[in-house]
Length: 485
Image (tube, rainbow, N blue to C red; front, side, top):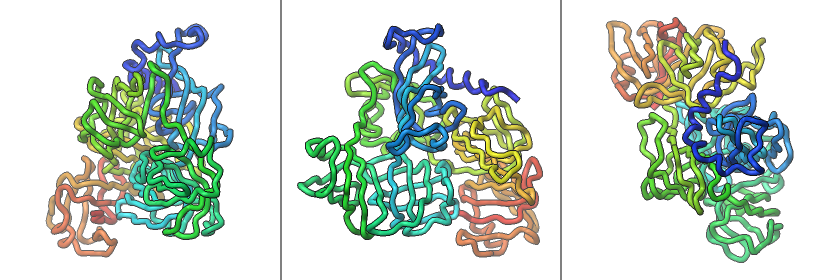
């Protein structure tokens, strides 16, 4: 097993382009204890791990950092993988970064007005006028998506604005009481008049609210956080507090990183993310996703601020994960950022999300989980997509061993063949053997169907979920296979 420093060369290599030329901006005389000048670095991104805090693929030391969670001073332990945070700090010529300040504010805390969950676990909900999408990269902190219902109080952290969010964490709260429970939501002010404005599809009545820093700061296009109460799903939010939030980050020439959803897109030379104008026309693309940048696409960017434009040095897009595997690890190769399970090979991104979910296991939870802390034989759940050069992992959870020794595979079918009274299905390179006699075949609604009907509906590209014995190289014979779409 490799020590915790194993992840640093990867982070440093990704930062090389970012740091080049930046150190001329060093502040405070550039002293950093002898390792070279320090450049300022600032940005918004998703927390992907701990042992330090990893944000946007950068490892930030937090020894002297001030941390704020929902407006209150907090310790690092209050942060969770998946939280969207704002970070300000410094970075040296070797790529060593340290945070001066980390701020987390949830995107909304309110009741679910509507929720739809697909068989593959993806879905959409509405809360406080916001449409919230969730997928395999969303961390459900204490309640799985399938157990959430209309009226449940949830706290959401996510990417996006103006009424649409891609959730990165969702946490169920205490019992919600309409008209009494204090709730909050962030967004962009639209249709402002003398007493109300719009956030997404939510009308906000601010006539009795305290406005920070003052009423003259409130105008159309302002980003705000609103607190108050709501009597019903279709009623206005009666605000008691409205706080304007500055979205611009950094000073001219400072190094910036930014993660969010692309807004108005007129090409790589002119688009916006979180209200920040971006020019990525000369930037290096660092991902292998088969997805072009465009409106609504999730993107992470590194570059520098020139005037009011973030000029990108590099960027990466991240599609929603379409493949999930849960199995025992066959092999771990930390130096090459590679994992193998069910004979499939996965590449780990610098911003891959890591969670240890073994709280009911004697081994306990490892908050500092990274690839170098995994071992062959560990049971993991991985989410990701098929990139141009192979499988790319966007999220990894180490989980307790399955009591029945089962593995799980979900994703679009690569190939499928009927063989007498059985068959062979391949999903993302993982082989699944099925038997008419022992495998339970299910439709998308979870109803049992016979094998002939299953094979008539299933074809390359059809999404399925298979559960069965983990025989190292494949699932053989599957206990169940279900059509997921």
